[in-house]
Amino acid sequence: TAGITQAPTSQILAAGRSMTLRCTQDMRHNAMYWYRQDLGLGLRLIHYSNTAGTTGKGEVPDGYSVSRANTDDFPLTLASAVPSQTSVYFCASSEDGSTGGLASGYTFGSGTRLTVV
Amino acid sequence: GQNIDQPTEMTATEGAIVQINCTYQTSGFNGLFWYQQHAGEAPTFLSYNVLDGLEEKGRFSSFLSRSKGYSYLLLKELQMKDSASYLCAVMDSNYQLIWGAGTKLIIKP
Image 1: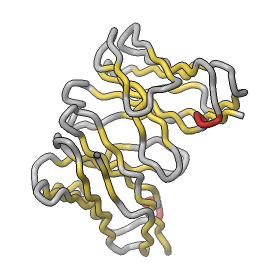
Image 2 (image 1 turned 30 degrees about the vertical axis):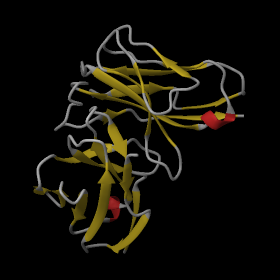
Image 3 (image 1 turned 180 degrees about the vertical axis):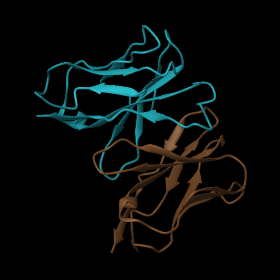
Image 4 (image 1 turned 90 degrees about the vertical axis):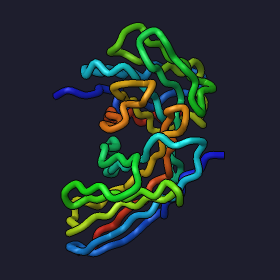
């Protein structure tokens, strides 16, 4: 089934450790996004990429980095985790970053539940 | 600043109709989206409105009034499986999605 694969599904991470959340899509979508979702808050954009080779900062980029070496993969790295990064992380994609893939919306991965202790 | 407001929680009865409202204030407007999110799962796309009016898709309809900064999602013939959170999101002038916190809909038999 075409879509977005995220790994791992969940992780407990010691504070100060680094970690990379993986995201792969097979829809050949140009744009990809990383969001975090916390209770009582809307999805917040961490980083995005409108096309392979380019990335941009979202609303809450501090403490996170991304790369987009090819169309399919968009990993998110936490260099030195802190407890405030405990959250559910969703990767998403859309057909066209400049217009956001309007009518078809975004496709989301199943999420990574990260707990930093 | 940019803001999306929707009720935190709503309760409805199986077989009934429910309307979930969303008001927004954003820098520019390039469309409004509704997503459904079951607990512990990813959001899934329900609808997209860019022009004023009602868009109907089966049991779900979405309405938009750009002049009022207002939208609603209408769910008819409610089923237990409709118990979920419903997320309203607006695409701003930079083609970035601004998300509401979601409305948790509880369906009772």
